[in-house]
Length: 308
Ligand SMILES: NC(=O)c1ccc[n+]([C@@H]2O[C@H](COP(=O)([O-])OP(=O)(O)OC[C@H]3O[C@@H](n4cnc5c(N)ncnc54)[C@H](O)[C@@H]3O)[C@@H](O)[C@H]2O)c1
Image (cartoon, rainbow, N blue to C red; front, side):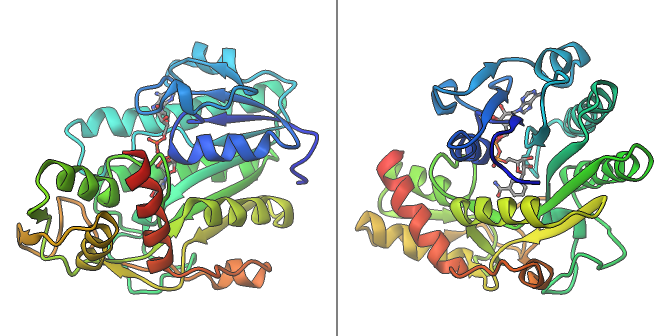
């Protein structure tokens, strides 16, 4: 699908990735942002977007946001904490939002739908993990909710003639990121510049990608993949350890703190210590990540040190 001259609904468009996406799409499209601001910010919604402040777990909220004149839905709204205190709510909210949006899209004749899933659907899989890896055994309720959402996408793609793009993201970093390792380290070091507490043993190795590269990859897939259900990993070819992130953040803040590790190979319950996604399917479609995971961490750190 061309991404020009369209009317697009971006759910979660007041959040980190969604607000950057809405900004970009507005260059050539009309954009409606739907978000309940539970984790996003009103000031991150671009001025020229229409803004619908509604809870999308409520079918009436979805009715208000999604009307028949929309060409495509790009669904990013989700409760995204892996180690949440409210797993039931997370599972119910994420699956209810996706179901409400798909069902409303079918009802009003909107037949293009993009969804942001996650590497967590793979569970603890060998790296690099390709899209056809099986069995999919998530180890967090967040990952399970994303996998359930993906199964709903399959129904609407194969039974209701929808074209669906499903993105399994690695760790996406950049400005406006909150509640993740880079901004957490910055906040901790602002409070105590001498000591940095690191969750786990610091040897967790994961793939990080800058949000601008992530959006380039998404746009490329939406433009070029036209199967009923198009599932693509989106990440970099390399990884960065948590201790390396601590080094980069300390360096960029001009600090030399002592590190204190909480220990254990996982940072939190449901954490996957090693994650790197295969991006060969994306490369075969003509888009290759040029920046490394370390580049992404460095660039995001610089942006976030300015911002937080
Ligand atoms: N950031 C990452 O590293 C990453 C990795 C894998 C997948 N993802 C997925 O990408 C998407 C965007 O992530 P993000 O990092 O921008 O997260 P985010 O929390 O910044 O954005 C999500 C937005 O959804 C909104 N939202 C949540 N519940 C809602 C509800 N009931 N009704 C309406 N709006 C609601 C929040 O207010 C927030 O603005 C999410 O689906 C997330 O699971 C992100």
